[in-house]
Image (cartoon, rainbow, N blue to C red; front, top):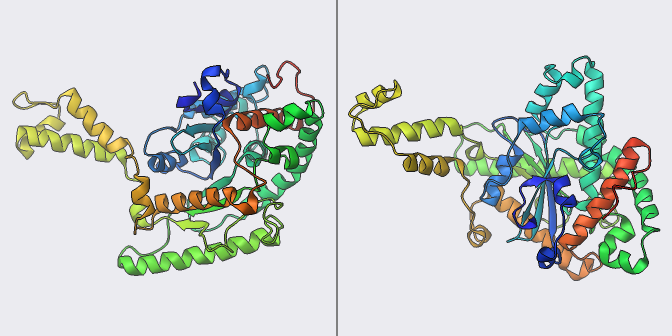
Length: 414
């Protein structure tokens, strides 16, 4: 069922649509994607789970390994081109969240370069890098025309110029894919075309206006002994400097157009006064969940037994006087530490704290307001059903572009 989606992108768009979901399919949606670099203790999934207040995304090394095992195997066409894109539909906020996993992640590179995967054992370094670049480009080509906003995650406070190169290549690829999309439109009756797809997708081959870009940077270089006021002041300056640098680079390479934002490749909000860069402060650095869980369990055990000596004994496997934590208490502690807490959107709206949830919430509200304002009334939000149909058609066209051949007629739009 569409209502509880915690799944792969392809499974989502190709699932069977039933009449029970018709009301949901007719609801308007905002589409936001998260991409970028991550390490094992600081993932895009964890960041988004904390914002959403529930564990809807999770890292699975098996998925990455299965993807590498399936490279060059095209028996299952539908699963071939976007296996590392995960999706979640937040019904409450009417937002579709997408995460691109893999390409810049330590775990994926470990599988690829440590000769763990049989498919790549005899490949050279440059062959592996070429594979990563190509797969990442087509994964971005799959989601870029579908998104209203993209959030780039960096693990350091320095903008990676590789993003500029990648976006320029993506912009060139977009024109070729757009020709394929328009060619596909010719076989669809005009009356069906206007209801099946968003008008903006029919006109420009992308949903809504050009996507808005947001950038988030981890591991700021500020000293830990600075007071909170000074840290806040320096972080604000750092964010402003990064905004200016990124805006200049994007404009210099023709990726954004401040005067004509709707027709440009992407958008930024430097002219509106709404921040599009966020630097995480040190208090937002992810904690070691395993360490916290162990401390909580042993702490509770100490309260039950009543002494440090008995806690030490329990660590060695002896339960002292027979006291132990019951399974319900253990489950409560695990959930308390590992499960993200639901954010109160009203509190967030009026919060005086400037943190990542506040930054993202404000950016989404600004985006939604801009898309529904009179200025851009020609680009209304698509329905969930229109998003699915556009994603299907886009996927088929990308498959053709990627493989240089026509898509099998059996894998139609359905």
